[in-house]
Image 1 (tube, rainbow, N blue to C red):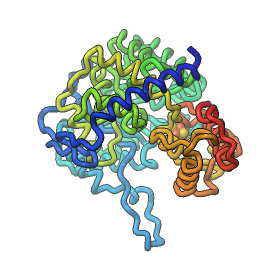
Image 2 (spheres, protein in one colour; image 1 turned 90 degrees about the vertical axis):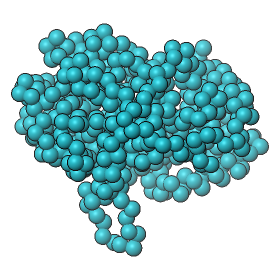
Image 3 (tube, protein in one colour; image 1 turned 90 degrees about the horizontal axis):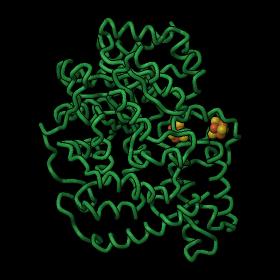
Length: 477
Ligand code: SF4
Ligand code: SF4
């Protein structure tokens, strides 16, 4: 079946499912949810599921806290004083979230020198200290994030690692990762870690106990993943971090030939008994903000469960998984995820198959752009707000408000809504039509999105909208 045919088939199936499911829930109230759909149940304490790391016997909570989207303070609009990036982080709120997570059994905190404009490690260190928990009660994961060629020397690599210890206020790191190997292929892997002796240095630190577990996170060129695993006998990876969720299990490569199916990645680790740390269980939040017809399908099976809980239960069910990372900015997300894992109710094989096949294909029947809003592509030297443009587009697709064709009955209204909201969310000089196609952003994108091509596609779509010449095919390709 070609892609267009598949989209049509999946689309038809989705419509039927949505209709069937909507009939049952419209206007109804569900136990444990307030009228806005937020959970009101208590958040369990002492019920968290733990997995054992076979190398160190660490009992790691299946929910890991990703410290990449830390809450920011509301700025005083009347003040013309811009705070520094460090001050922009709402440290009190970070402290509160971290303490709450620890109190509810979360003990794995994953940060990087690259997160939160370079301040995540500092904020994480402060929050963990302020929690009052003994250092032995939680695990810190951080990364060697030497992305810029200016950081590829041995000295710079050592400096980044030493700074991590300092910023995190600790004298050892529980889980240290070579960050995002795969971007730039084997050549970049050699320059970042192999030829400059940085990996040898990290192996020495593991020998000394300054690093307790050494691993890598992977995005991009699968040759790098395969190469590092082929050296497992020599490097003895303690864990590997991969992207895994139910839509990427079989379809990651079909939807983007530069990506690798999670099934392959997971099975390669499983074969070698290497624990897997999971990132993007929600595909950058997109599996919690699903199109209405997919939500209806999920709600039909378990009306009381949040949409996100399916994705968390899915990732946690795989037995080789050590922990599932979630970047939780708000207390309600943290609480919802704690509920999903306190304790984990594993999915049945039938439920896993259903998510990996039927629900995943239903999801892809609406072609969103796989942007996770990680901001690695920013700033664009020409001022384009790449994630905001993709977010606007995806939101319209997910809400089912995309204008379809100039002939559609609701075209004028849908066009008006799309354009007004685009103008409001992305300032004019930062919109897609200002992209000059320099491609400087492309290598930074861990999702391998062909950013300039997508921007050109969105710009072309908007032009046709404005001129009233849109045809139905242009929404899909
Ligand atoms: S290709 Fe476009 S979006 Fe990317 S850096 Fe260049 S101008 Fe910015
Ligand atoms: S386009 Fe890529 S790099 Fe930029 S925010 Fe989205 S996922 Fe991140």
